[in-house]
Amino acid sequence: MNFKLAYTLVETIVVMTVVAAICIVMVVVLRPKDVKKEVLQKAGSNILYQLDFASKQILAKNTVNYSLKYLKADDGSEFDITSDDAEQKLISIYKKYLKGLNKKSLSSEYLSKVLVDENNMALTGISANSFNYGFFLNNNAYIAIKLNKNCTTHETYIYSPIQIQKRERNNSCGLFFFDVNGDMLPNKLGVDQYIVSIGEMGIK
Image (cartoon, rainbow, N blue to C red):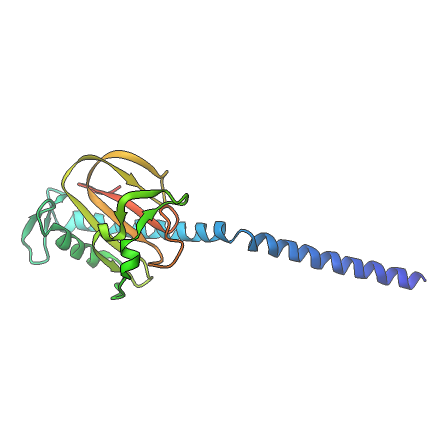
């Protein structure tokens, strides 16, 4: 009788241990979005640092008067960031300082879809297609650029992985859009998609 009781206690402990393990697993399983969001935001921070590093390299080696507004193209000629072909020339310079390039392309559906945030609030009329001269890095991140042609103060949405996402007024020459995992879901601003401002002295 005593042996049977002891055996039952052992069984109970084993069952409790199994139940505890299942509960821990369920907690993790029931929070995949939070875990995934944290991973994606970390990836977003890494890309932002790459862009910042590239900007500093460009300012040091490819600019006139240490300003991104006036640059030197690949052929050594100078160009103004407000000129018609500035986007293509600027992105070609950035490509030199970013880690690895991939020739993968995005679907027209992804490019044309209006950008939305975590709450499915849309940026009216703004899609990935609004940003010109996009390209992929080898880590599957997609980066594109949009210049406003004048570097003046204007109101725009800024979604940065290292600062509070807000609508703000800033002196901007344009915007960088990047998606840390290309066209893979969730495709949400502030989670895997970000927009940062390009000022005369680099990104901000």
